[in-house]
Length: 88
Image (cartoon, rainbow, N blue to C red; front, side):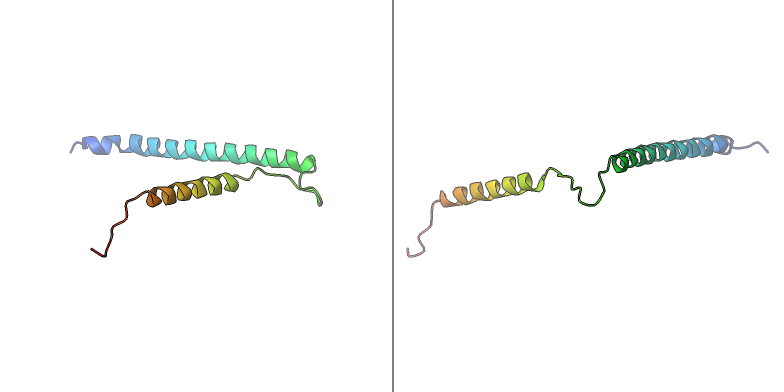
């Protein structure tokens, strides 16, 4: 009995799937190694010794400022709306 077309291609599909998985695994390993090397170079430079504090830019201030600006513009827009008289 002849093999079906799908069965013939099964080994190719499995090999392709395993190949993609290995490529992803290698990319992750390469990134981790690069990160580890960077951290080790910073440790060698004394970045994590006691008393050494690195100043990081604070992006939260910009986000908070943008949010407060949006709230202020919303309040101004609501002040400009015509008010209805309920006494009528």
